[in-house]
Image 1: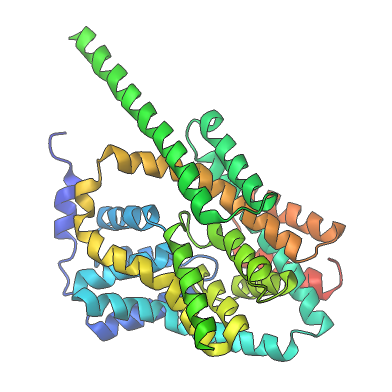
Image 2 (image 1 turned 90 degrees about the vertical axis):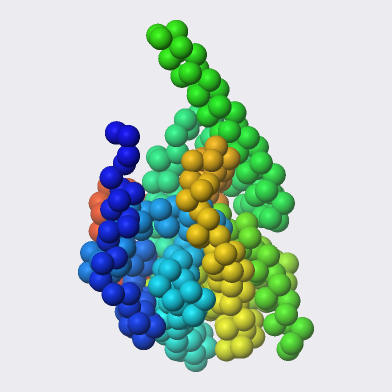
Length: 206
Length: 174
C-alpha cells in the first residue's frame, strides 16, 4: 500500500472529451428537473456512471469539499464540476442549468399558490405535506445522529443547539460559530490524543 | 422595493456563511428571520412554502426562492436564490483546486466532526418548526411520527410520503 490506486484512477477517468457548454447546461437541467427529494444521487449517476466524466474517487473528493463548506451541497458541486471543464463560464452554466428549470417550476407553483392558496382543500393538502415533510426532517436528523461517532460526547451539543433555536430563539450565526468552536476543538484534541497514544504504542512495540 | 431587495440579499447571504449541513439545516434561522424578525409572512405561510418546495422537483435550496417570491414577487425570488447560492459558489470556485492539499489537515477533520452533531440539532429544529408552523393537530403530529418511523425502517422514495401527506390532508384526516 505505498501508492493508493485511486490517485491513478482519478487521472485516467476523463478519457472522453469534456462536454460543451450546451451539453453541460442540458445535462444539469435534466438532473435538476428530475430530482425529487435529493439531486445528489442523480448528479453522481450522470457524472460517474452515465457520462463517465470523472471517477468515483474524484467525485467523492469534490463532494467532500462541497459538504464541508456551508451552503447548498448541490450548487457547490455544480460550480466545481462546471469550473473543472470550462472555468468560470462552466461554473455559471452548470449552476444555471441546475437551478433554472426547477426555479421556473417553483414560480409556476408560487403563482398557483397566490391564486388558490386560500382554498380550504389546498390549505389542508399543504398542511398534510408539511406534516409528512416534518417527519422526513426528523428521520433525516436521526439517521445523521446514527452516523455521529462518539455520540455520548457530541450529541449533547445537538440537543443544545436544538433548544437554543427552538426554545430560546437565538440567532444562528453567532450560535453556530460558538458551538462549532467548541465541538471542533473537542474533535481536534481527541484526534491529537488518539494519534499520540497510537504513536507511543507503536514505539513500545518497536 | 430596492431597499427590501437589498435587505433580503444581505440577510440571506449572511445566512449561507453558517449554513453548515446544507439548506435544510437553515430552515430554523430562515423562519426566525422572515416570520419573527422581519414579519414578512406568517408561520402558516412559511410551512406552506416549505410544503410546496417539498412537492416540487429540484435542489432543496429552492424553498428560498419561494420565500423570496412571497416577500417581493419574482424579483424577490431571483434575489433570494442568488443570495443563497452566490457567496459560497464564489468561495468554492477559488478553493476547489487547492482542496486536495487540505484533505489530511487535522483542522479539516476536526471541523467536519464538529459540524455533524450541530447539523443533527439543526435539522431536528427544522422538523420541529415546520410542524409547529403548520398548526398540526393531534392527527397531524401522528402522521409526522408515522412518517419518521417508516423513513427509518423502509427506504421508500420521499415522494410517497409527500403524496400520502397531501392525500391525508385532502381527505380531512390531518
